[in-house]
Length: 216
Image (cartoon, rainbow, N blue to C red; front, side):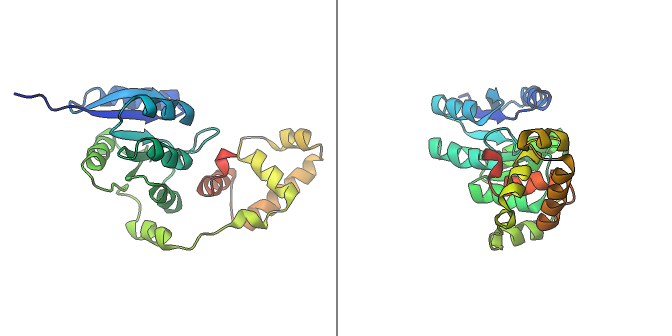
């Protein structure tokens, strides 16, 4: 009997614990082989140049280059490679953005391991996989929506504060970097949240990811 070639898979995630956990889970799947598990876009692209990947599992919120940007870059190197996004974020807007970038599917890290493996098999089989607990109608609505550019409404100083906030800087750290009073930082932060309709820094990060600002 002729052996069926295993699908060549790469994992791209900057969280070591999750990366190694998924790698361990996939070692028990007979028809796939993880040929690389890396922490950033640069290493992922280098791997893609060296290996004829069938599928790449990509996180969204990564340092320097987001998963959205990496998806486009990966497909330019390996057009036949399938991309499965795997993130803690289950927002329809980000799911739609990954699909626009060329991803074939999107799963959420809180899903059971068996569902994530099903997602991998589905995408390898040519299907579009979407997380079952997220409204497909909401995702389709986002795909059909006109692009929204809320960051253009920020002033230069607000944009500076925003960029530092989404990179994990505290109010005190921003005060030191920009040489302004902490109270001024707090004022800018509140104005930014009002303009973006964001209730937290996490929501700011989601907006930044949607508009490619995590790559700046």
